[in-house]
Length: 206
Image 1 (cartoon, helix red, strand yellow):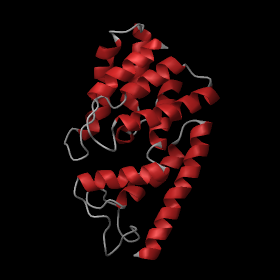
Image 2 (cartoon, helix red, strand yellow):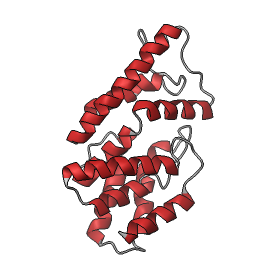
Image 3 (tube, one colour):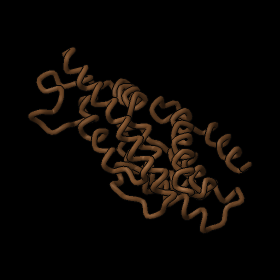
Image 4 (cartoon, helix red, strand yellow):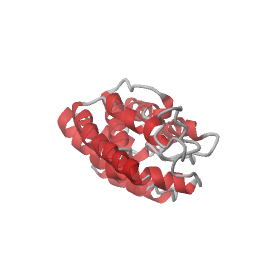
């Protein structure tokens, strides 16, 4: 599909230098989505187009408009897709998938394309790469690794705006139960096990 090659090049030129949401992130999500598409027999053109454009606008986590990144990416995707050979219905499916994929939007996408995008993106927040992304983001924002009095949120509510390890408890460990597809659920379970092993090892070292 030549249109995907064209979209990939356009996205590559526009991606910001954010190690947690860079072009490498897009391509990992792309790979996840390809695997899910095969299992779900989904429309690859629509799913992979949504993947390529899902972070076309991505505000830093510290930005007041951070929660609107997926909404603005959806709007921008419509403008981009009009330049290519997509029907209005296809553009709507892709932009809706992008709008609803974000964890901060707290939505379950209505379409299969949206569900696959959401799962593929969430898988990149788990496992070894997920751990790397957590600390890359925490470091870029100058956040301490953990709360020294209660590192693992045993007696307090997690606050990942202050401590990096809190993000495991506030978001990452919840993702396994929020997956939409069979493949997503199986893979999330494997990757969540890696997060738990990491936290177990961290506990021994503190």
